[in-house]
Amino acid sequence: MPPLANVLAQLDAIVLGKPHQTRLAVACLLARGHLLIEDAPGVGKTTLAHALARTLGLDFHRIQFTSGLLPADILGAAIYDRDSAGFRFHPGPIFAQVILADEINRASPKAQSALLEAMEEGQVSIEGETRPLPVPFFVIATQNPGDQIGAFPLPESQLDRFLFRIRLGYPDPAAERALLQGEDRRDLLARLPAVLTPETFMEHQRAAQQVHVADALLDYIQALLAASRQDTRFAAGLSPRAGLGLLRAARAWAWLAGHAYVQPEDVQAVLPALAPHRLFPATGHSGGEDWAARTLLETPIP
Image (tube, rainbow, N blue to C red):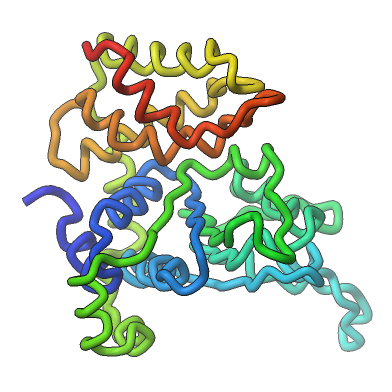
C-alpha cells in the first residue's frame, strides 16, 4: 500500500469526487508548502482545509478575513495587565500548526501582509520580539474569484509564498448525488478522527524529501524553468524559489505514489498547481493558466 493511503481515503470520503485535488493538497503539505484554494463559494474549500487539519492530527485555527481585519487580530498584541503592572503578550490565532485564512482576499493588503514573515520563516516579529511558530506550520488560504465585489488581489510576494494553488470546481453528477443523499459534511467533520500525529506526519515529510532525483530529472526541471523565463507573454518567469518548490513537490508526489525515485510524470502532475499563480502577464498579454499544459507537451521528457 502506498504511503498515506489511509489519509487520502479519509479525505476522499469527505470531499467527494476530487481525488486529484486532495492528493495535491496532501503533497503540498508533505513538501512543507502553503496551499491556496481558489474557487467560487460553496464548493468545499473550507471543508477540505478542516479535513486536512483533523486527519493529520494538527492544531487548527480559522481566521475569517474581512475588510476590517487588522494585523494584531492575526498576530496578537501586548495588553496592559493591572495585576502585574506591565504589558503581557496575548498570542493571536496565527500560533497554531494549521491556519485557515478564510477568504484571504477579502482583507486589505495591510492585513494580508501579516502572514508574509510567518509563511516564509515560520516566525513573527511582534512588539520588537521574534516569536517562533509551532512546528509544523501551514497556511491554507481560501480565495474567491478576484472579480467578485470586495476582493483585494493578492500581491505577487504573497502569491509566491503559496506552493500550490488549486481549484475544486463543481462535483460531477455522481459525487453530487452522493453529497445530497449523504450526511451533512459539518457533522462528519466533527467526528473525523486523526489518522496521524504531528510527529508521524513530520517523519513522512522527511522521508518524502529523501526520494532519489536523477541528474536527468534535474535537467528536465531546469528546462521547464527556462521555458517560463523565455516566454515573452510573462513579465518574469519562474524564480529559483519556484524551482526548489517544484523539486520538493515532485518528491512528495512520488512518495505518495510509492515511487523509489522521482519520475517525469511526478513533475508533470504538480506543475499545473505550482506555476500559473507565479506567472504574471506582460503588457498586452493574458495570464498563464494554459502555460503548464502547453509547456509539458513541448519540453522533451528525459
